[in-house]
Length: 248
Image 1 (cartoon, rainbow, N blue to C red):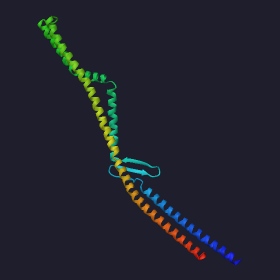
Image 2 (cartoon, rainbow, N blue to C red; image 1 turned 45 degrees about the vertical axis):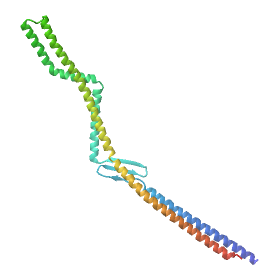
Image 3 (tube, rainbow, N blue to C red; image 1 turned 120 degrees about the horizontal axis):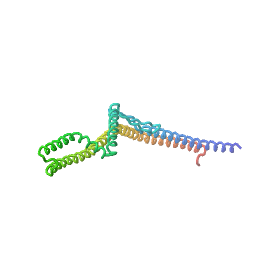
Image 4 (cartoon, helix red, strand yellow; image 1 turned 90 degrees about the vertical axis):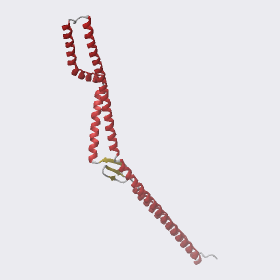
């Protein structure tokens, strides 16, 4: 009877030692896993872009919403606004002239004609007076001279009309060029803070790599320690079993 109880007690003790070793090995592995997860979480947090800034502006990153905001310095923001306003004004000029370039050309022609028209009138009156004085007004010879003068004046009008249209198209091209230049400056200014965003990404990437290497090393060390603990507890359990159940 006593022998049966002794064997039963040995079995319980042996099972308990084995289960205890298994439990401690499990806890060690769980602890190693927790340490590794925490280390890699810290590495991920270190890898997010940094907030950076300088004379041109700033770049900020919100890790919660994963959004990036880039802003110009107050001085450059004023320049940006000025170029934006100038672009709008030049666009308005293009729209006004480009909607009907022929009307714009006619307007410039009429402005130019208003300058030389009095001189043309003076030339015609002078020709008529001279022909009357010579008794040639209404004659064939006088008509030829008057027609020659009128043809010359018509040529002057035609050249003024062409010049008016050329001026209108030239102004349209000029305002378009100015608008394009304004938009180019707007784009250039708007891109300046991206340098800070790239810098912030670079710093975050470098810090993330450093933290990742540290996390990998910590995970390896934790795994090694867990294996060592598991081996120790398994060895202890084996020792207990050997003492309880020695091999013959």
